[in-house]
Length: 591
Image (cartoon, rainbow, N blue to C red; front, side):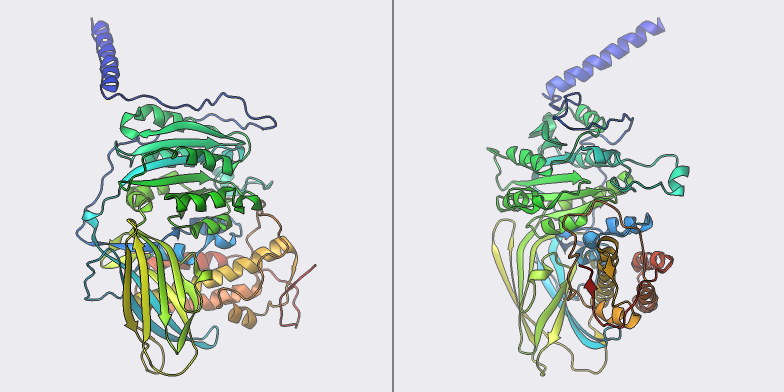
């Protein structure tokens, strides 16, 4: 009797589930066939696995707050690829660490003070002067605080037309902590580990978590690519999709074949054709990959040109790099594109946590085409820290393509600062006239005209802890970038080291952008790994900078600065490598 009752219950639940799906007109609209043959010449890599994850469309707990949101620039939103490479014993690539990415790991006092911001965007300015003992020169700084008058509880993203593009090529079968193209023995700690996540597992879990943040009136499409592209799911309303079926299809994906970035992106763009892209919708492509394509991807008809063209049509791109071997140097090009941002993934759990906190913000650019003109007879912009477009921001003008919303904590904004280094070109204490313009996402133009001035006092001063913290972090990033350039050049290009003495390294490593060539003999994007190495000169520089860093950290009383300190300590733990030295005060390469 019990067996009969149990059978009736099972049948009833099954029928009820089917009736519920029919009543809501949901369907399993997955179109990708994993058993389809690969294109000619492709080499499949197939492994099965069992995984689990959150339901697409499941509710996500959100904490409401009465504080305002902050603002942060687009481009890189983390430096995880940089840190993970060092942890795994590899030299990071140059753009694994960026100023805006490092700033986004911190909260800043933007210098708004008692002033109230009632607009979508309100800039605030702080000044500082210091004697840089590393570079032996007096330096002047101006920070631009990125504030908003919008309350966090009033922030609401638009509905989304979202297309997720996933790389399922063979290299996605590699583990997240190894370079796919490198044939070396695994770390001893890997051999003892019970399981090391593969990149395809991390990526699919990330997508499932991402989709749990979508609402029924959002639209979702999914594109996969290996040697070619596949439409896995048409761009349709989430509320009309069989969420559980789509989730299971995603988690069952396996890696295979080669890599064709552009094919995946072009297929994604086709899904937007003929679509009602009214102002009620944000249009975004989220592109997950571990690939390192060749320079052809930089041409106008390849990935990076396509992303720029899509941006001009109001379709913006988020790049998500998977694994330590992802090449963030490539993303540096995309980060300069309007509406674009970049994240890296090395753990499904960590990325899930990030999405729980950040998803609404990462898909909602609020401010575009920010331009700051500094009018002054006494000062000119020498460098900009915290903007992907820093190379274009010299002389009188600073440019930022996009500002995204960010969290605010205890009156401080996450990543809410851009730092300008100014060069004194004439004496006098005239104020700086700061003319700022920007547009909102509806295309409305705004203009702000303000003044700022440097204090006529002897010695160092900092208007706020925010600008002091930004200067310290920018020093850290500058040193790391110079170290990466020197170390990777030595790994790839058989550099003859002619500037290895510590005082020379110290002075030039406080200058960025550097006044020297980058990788002059590297013709294609590197696919192989470079082992972690620290020269004797850099080892001494790291020691000196660590002492300075600890002193500033104590003054600022900011525990978040521990993260940079941990990296310095990891590098100091590396046995210094000796190079042949010369008395010539220059830097050349073997031809």
